[in-house]
Image (cartoon, rainbow, N blue to C red):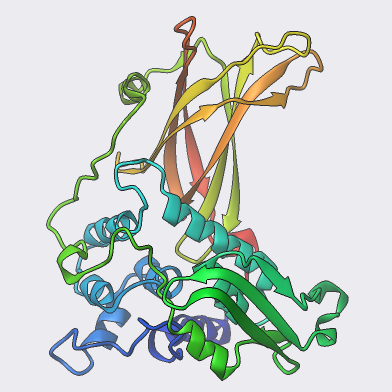
Length: 364
């Protein structure tokens, strides 16, 4: 990497932390987080790369000032991992469920924004339309939609997004974007930027307060409610069972420099599932992703009940998939399932190598 490209990369990383204009109401200048005038800036420069990227790219639009301050005071990587885990936990719609709905949906939106709204200079998540999509989701309708691939953007100088409701703004919200030729992109005019600034980006059920920012010693335990305890026991035992044939396939999508979205496809060979016999079969699945050290980073419970064509025209298989955001690196994937009728079980233990943002071909 040349010095010029390294300097540009560092500049783009520091820009949202120090120089970006407020985009939402909570994006205020840093409050009195440190006694020293430059304490926050020095703490940011001391962050390891992954933590630096997470603060600048993943959490930038939804982290509160209290959380940001707490994060900058942490000194160990393990503490930061605890904090990030709790950061998403506080935003879960249901803290007991294993469905990481807010986190997964957030990164799905980031990936979509990168693919849909990216430009030569900015990743899609950093454009005005991309940021709105990440924070508020897909609009109910869009007027004046353009097709960048055909050069038709200039034909629509205004693009309007319609939302039924946005927390902090109200009902029947219209947000306008103006096409600016020199940027070759749509940007928010001042009036709409001020309107968007009134919105609240975090879910309602678990408001973030200074008392629950996750600054605790040790790893806080989540009150998981495991439904498939027998399948969890199979995973914990680490014994491979092949009475039920399992296979997996993993696809990766670039989200941020700190996080890659992995989509894990699971397929179960089903002898009873044929084209001629109408057999309804469902397999419960218990899935766990962990680091080589044993640190569990994700647990899912789901049911495989979607028929899928096997290579043979005479047979079908049962499939399911789920998404999990992961930091680049190596993980252990464990999947367990059981046939409720016969009691036959299948356990698959394999390794996942999560690629980096750059290796997925993303440049900004």
